[in-house]
Length: 376
Image (tube, rainbow, N blue to C red; front, side):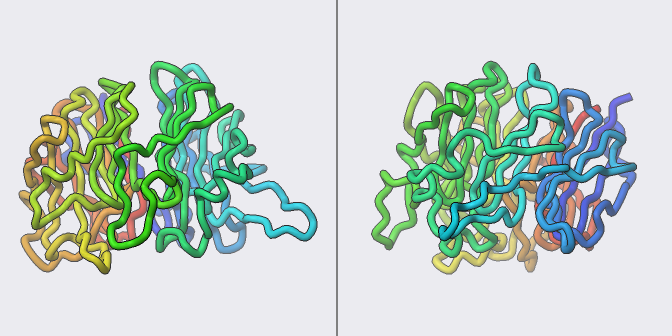
């Protein structure tokens, strides 16, 4: 029997919601890690049983937990992601938290990637129990310059995120840095190249768009049905790139002008590379990070970003000032596709019909940081 599982990460713990293929009645399991900050809870699709949780705890600090029984028991990583110790007399960096978790290619069992705040890239080859720096970027002088100062990062801390493995080739990798741009490797992380052509920078400042430092990608999503196509929700708009092109195209300019194309999150259809969904936020000069005018809505494109349609049936019509963070929107692979997002006010919303209608299935959770869906 088909089961849909939602993995919900919050500021004070994690929850697992389960439903059958109809997605009408949901059983709740949790909280796990009550009181701890959980940035990302991810199921390993290669065995459909292993869970990794990126946690920041009061007494253990930043760490990773692993479960092989769907959260009945958890084991802490023996060596979580950590930067190398700085030479005597030099200022070092410390991992504040692991922000992003990505399972490696299907032919690399037990291999995982992790992105941290401040920006760091790590790899585990033993299912998440021990982690080591991946490639040289963590301490590379050029990358350190692009990462900028920890004080100059995003309001909730600079971070490396959106680690993508090309499903056709485990050597082909992407990641985003906030700030620091988008980067690509064709040799399993031995070398990396910048991929920022066409991306805009914040207007009104003396920012050079050729420098990765000034770029803030919020979320990257590769299309499962066409891995040559990647969508991006950026601090400065919605973009798409079709490889082997080297240039991002700002498809968000086709969004309604009164809404704009600024936001944190997006998700893509598992079988149609023309279809994607975004959740805009208020992109005025003061960046309030709320739904525009307090009227939340998902916007869908079915033509690769040429046009967008508002999808808000079932959502509040006014005075709803929450928004959705970069990891907190996803879809499943069922037919029709189910869509899910969690809000900064602790609500969990679902659509069983690809965004046409929405229903809130949970309220009063802590602020939701991430939502992942799995079909079992």
